[in-house]
Length: 168
Image 1: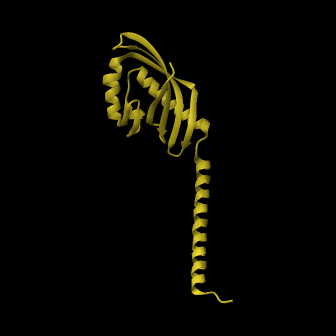
Image 2 (image 1 turned 90 degrees about the vertical axis):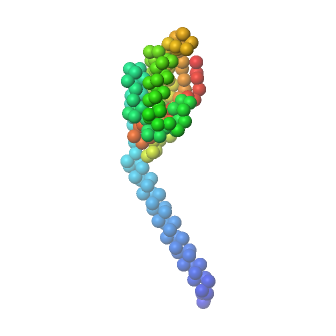
């Protein structure tokens, strides 16, 4: 049986493709092994997310707020603000938020934390936040309960802090 030049070329191509596919599969298996071996469990992720939320909560409640400690260098969303920096968040909190919301007390319901996604790049969570403050513009005390979506980067700094909905 004689093999033509065209058939030889096809066989060489199939061999090359097989080698490349094998290398890709090996890389994927190695990556998955590394992720499983060195990644955190969901419970550990939840614990680290809780610590980040407590740090934010304390900063707001003590009016000792420094976004550089709490936020990523580029924040996708902070409530209604999009694509902002920690400097812009500091400006808002220290000059507008505290002027409108007098003596704010926020608390995160740590039992409500739901981890939606986590990987080597960070974590996405949902949590309930309770707010208690005197609202200057309306001259009255208010309480709110809100459902938040928060994305933390791999260093557990806030990348997204989004109001999902107001519960009450």
